[in-house]
Amino acid sequence: MPSRPTPPSPSRLIVRALLVELRDAGVDVQALAAEAGLEVGMLEGPLGAEQADAFLSRTAAALPPWFGLRIGAELQPELFGVVGLAAMASPTFRTALERLARYKRLMTGDDMILRSGQGETTVQFHAVGSALYVRQKVDCELAFVVSLGRRLTRSPIAPLRVAFEFSYLEYYERYASFFDCPISFDQPTNEVVWKNADLARPLVTASPDLAETFDEKAGHLLSQPDRAATHVRATLRSLLNGTVPRIVDVARHLRTSRRDLQRQLQGAGTSFRDLVDEARHELARVHLRNADLTYDEVSYLLGFSHPNAFYRAFKRWTGTTPDTYRRGARDMAPQVKLDS
Image (cartoon, rainbow, N blue to C red; front, side, top):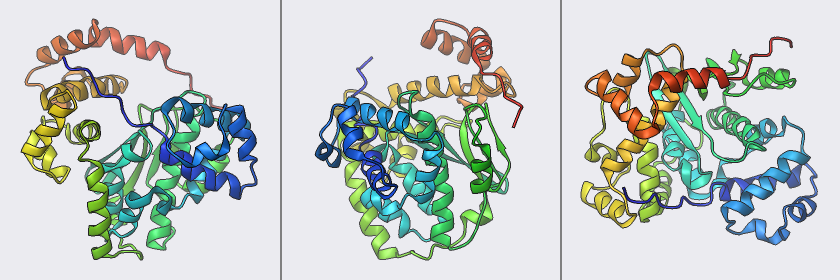
């Protein structure tokens, strides 16, 4: 199987945006950079993955555990360049989120997936990074989405519910005060669930001409082969829900042609078939952590024609069976802390 291309630095833009908030909060950025072995001027330019990881780890260790929540609540979308500006110029809150999801990996290296249901839409986050700061990163991501909706619609909208993979912490009241909705912990995914009516709200910053311009500029970033493969992975995770997407479906979602997408993937040393297999593998692990899903349901969600085909594929991916993997995931799951 072709080797997977190296992804872009997972936190280049989030570091840039973080600098603004740290300085506004009076944090000694120069001291934090020095502790991470960096010159402060290096933080303004492109960082390698190890450099970004070192700075974010030092930042998380030096700040209160709830600081990610604060940053997300105050983060301005324009700090993310053309991607943030394209979101701001969108006609509705849903369109803004769809644009952010499409280019999420360009900004932070993470995945953001929208799943629509009856009357509601779930916005899921799959975060990458060191355990030293990934919780603050998730706090920031979920708070940013909620803050974005309130800021751009000029209305105090609240999600239906919010879920975190992490355990309950002592700063729960900060969560409750900001999100203003039911919150659960130790869940299979990090997610914010919205009423579809709230996602349909128009944005006060909407501008069709600017949205097209910024979206086109952001789209050029996807034309690079390694980034194209990265975004195909993210799109497959979003669309793989009962049926296996065709390459033409993914190309349409990424606003390119099937031929161009095939060419870009070939240049990245991979293929659409390999990326589908990879996405199924990753989602299988996520679904098996959800005890409410039967094996037949997991098989269906991954687009397999029969549960036996899913079992064989999972054994090929992991060397173990779905039953063994689920038991191991359950045994390693953290215990829910009930005290407040």
